[in-house]
Image 1: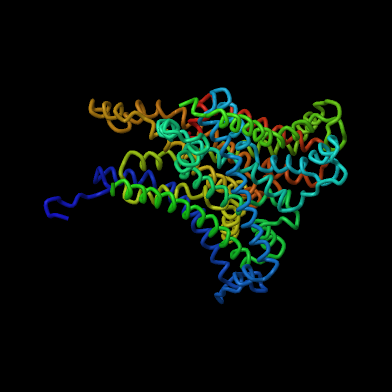
Image 2 (image 1 turned 135 degrees about the vertical axis):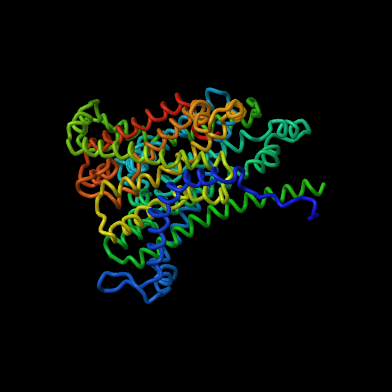
Length: 306
Length: 267
């Protein structure tokens, strides 16, 4: 750096009074979050590193025993792996289903685009509880379940399909619950693609599917990454859907956590489970942010090199 | 921006799109169809047609109480989140604040934090200090989950404001609060209203926060509905669920009328 450019005070545009004013405007919200989210969460997560005593109190000695049990004892490990599996499969299925809908919002005729938009957003404001109840009715194992009733009605109903109270029922309902959160960022990405780019690919002779794979798909990756991280972390953290549809076979970390603190009164184990759940959620989000920024930097470098 | 679909693409998008829309609607339609069934149990297929279950649900004093608890909670949480969120979003967007990115990340963090753990941590924290007032705890918990939505929608609205108008007003000698009130506010009102409506629904529909913080006297609607599901097997559960679906449908219509769904969802 040459000495001609004086170092500019970066960040503060209006030094003096207004930076105090802006701080005063930010402080209440930040203080509220610190007092009721950050601090309580740290206390809860710290429990995971301590010992549950017979007296009911969670206190030192500090230990990693809770994590050891969670990660390596078969029953807990099974729940952890099942949680990751359900979150992974749900994210994958959601991507596949979200693409046509996002493309409809971005490219279809106005009436269809509007219809899709309304039907994608509407479930977002219907309680997960109600939607899980709907899936309970749909997936019921006996003949009174809608799916089995339908299969019987069209002649496939020799043996009822039994997916209720398995992880697959949880996957189906989770896909339904989180689909809007994949469609919306994806549709945002797609509408921001310059149509001329796709037209150029087509005019240069690329088949539609090739234009999609080589142009549309890569340009939609920011929305896709954001959607996957949200769906993955929310699925891994869900409670009500596995509680209503998973039974004991489909129980996930959230259900294990609830059981540890309400029936086993083991707050140390609860803290460890909470720690892992937070780590999954933050890991997915930070990982996605990093990936998007890394791609942007890489693209900037590539265009700078030319 | 339209007409970028090839023929095969259109078949895929319209055909698969329609199928997936059916998947989205199926569980809601099943619930609604059973809410008007005359059968004594909520089993498919529905039989006959009646509004009796709605009558019974609305006549149930516990249901009405739970509904009111949820409405009051959602209004109070939205109002408080608005009071905390508007100044914060404004400061972050109009003035350069040191560490703005970090502060914005903190303000939006409840959105990515597992909600089940937000509620549990708050319960443990309040209980350890002997604060067992369920109404107060529910209120604080619901502010936590609605605040990020309001910060986000207010930020989005502020970014769409025509800054040249604000600057013109300032150059003409208007003090900052007058610029805000006469120039900025009229432009962000629809976006803010949409944000408040969305925040209302987030609180109204919430289960994982209330699961921990409700007590026997203060039971929000989703908690009441969930406990009813394990006791009652007649279509009144479907009727209650349908009332919740209708509330959501009203909210969607409201969002569409206020700013249009696309803008409300940031597309």
